[in-house]
Image (cartoon, rainbow, N blue to C red; front, top):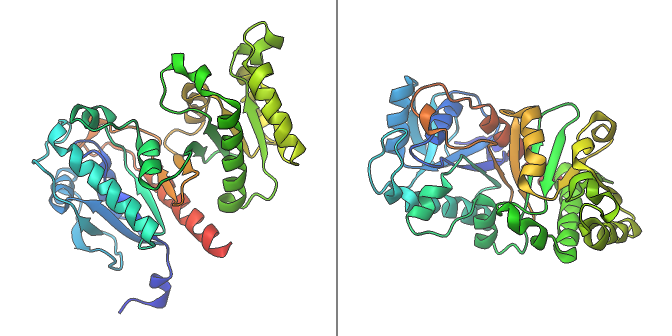
Length: 334
């Protein structure tokens, strides 16, 4: 019989990601550890056993909801469409990848899971199979009927670095048009709210990047700061929020600013994330704000060349699981 302590632990769903990538490897590596949560992996059990064999690691598959012991994984089974060769993509298995996400997301919505953690997927092969898919963030937002998902990465640095994005997976030429007053205000509302609710920060201090070099340099390098960003930030400050900016992105990411910040809001993907990943790659976590569920993920891709080799580093997945547990407990206590 499960002990009350076990039953009261957060129940985390872990999707194994692209079956030809390192996601299954990371799940097998994670299985070797002692866990302070209930963990259910959503995957094909035969795939996990196959990958454990390649890695030379012990793995016993148990039923979903079982007590975890090192060397075991509780698995909710989803069958692959076709057998997998480590490192070789196969678009026939794109539907399998999406089904694992559906099960985890729906389980969080129903309360069967308290959070979901996602191993990396290969967006290109999902699109090649005929599915419109721009990333976990957008897919899970649509699945959970969230109006505006916000991508935020955290790095286990000192102090902890958090970088959220106004826009995510867009071509650079489309970024400026996507930054509207409404979108920026909604992004700040969600970021402020979730920093309070999920991270327990009573009065978050948020630093906001400008869009253009030197934050537009008074309109000489673009007028988005003057026309869009500054008015929204001023409105936020009138609500009593601690919002600083817009600041030039090339100097914002220095100790002078970051030592007093709870989060940075960057305007686009490659404005903020290269800095964060440089500071904490392998210890960083992707967390989606603005969802009715808790979702965290690794900070890296599928690393097809490492699949089955035993060389994949599970550090980011461990951090993603730790953060999912932390956020689950924070919501429960709140």
